Amino acid sequence: MLNLYSARIESMSIHRVGNKSRNESLFLSEEPFELSDELTPLIKEYFLKSFRDKEENYYQFVHETDLEFHNLYNLANEIFNNPSKTHEISKKITTYLFEQSMHQHIKGGEVYVVYFENVLVDNEKVNAIGIFKSELKHDFLQFEENQNNLDLILQQGVYLNKLDKGALILETEKEQGYKVLSVDSNKYDTKYWLEQFLGVDFFEDENFYTKKYLKFCENFAKDVVLPAEDKQQEVMFMNKAMNHFASNDNFNEQEFLKDVIENPDLEPEFKNYKTEQAPKYKIEDLAEFPISNTAVTAARKKIKSVINLDTNVQIKMDFVNGDSADKYIEKGWDEDRQMYYYLVYFNKEEKK
Image (tube, helix red, strand yellow):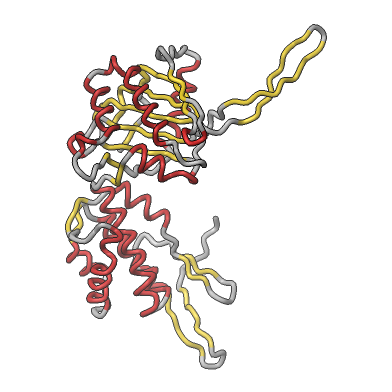
């Protein structure tokens, strides 16, 4: 789990990059920026707010040959090994970002390279490097007293409530390429930020495996269970899958299948579907792994246990226990109306 509330800014450098393909310039500051006591909490909130609100999808630096050839990974190593050189290396980081700014759609902007201390990762204090970029400028009004009148001045600046682009490089798991978090509010150039500049891929840990396996289960329910049976069985399958993950610390595929799949005909279907779809989710050889409670909680919020009927009626099944759908809902066929129906059992209506 990531905790950024105790994080402390030790140094900050500000530079500016333009779009190289449009012959825009690169500006590198000679000295690091000295933050005032008044500005420090505001700028820290600007940089870190998006990461606190974001699901923890970690990345790691990757290189097709070896990490020793990864530019940003090596520059991060230099800073972590000698934080006093942060400003000097921030110029190299900004220059490298400028070199990647070749597509005509990429916007120029200010680049902030920040060295943090006291970042908590799984209750362990680590240092971190923040690379942030502000691209969009917003109009705001400034007022100035002029003798007996109050003048209104239109200016442009950075909106502190929303970070355009950012990355946090955490000083942990160095041998695997560090743990890296990324934020990108402007989706038109994601490839440039994640692939060309950061050079990262998903960090394959329990959070990654849990999230990917549950997404695989969700699509199996939609692609196989729903056509073979009905919406009720699709919802029941996902409820049981979620409850299995929530009730166990470690995942075992055989135990999972025994617990979740009641129809024996579906088990070979599940295995065939996994063989076909596993590369898409990077779970080819995944049969056992530690379960991430954070990933389960996040996935549960996204699962929609709703049956939408063509009579403009919705049945929402918000179950803690997946067996509830089987106990309290029955599906049938009415010969007189020539329509399907759901019979719902309950003790009383909840007043909410």
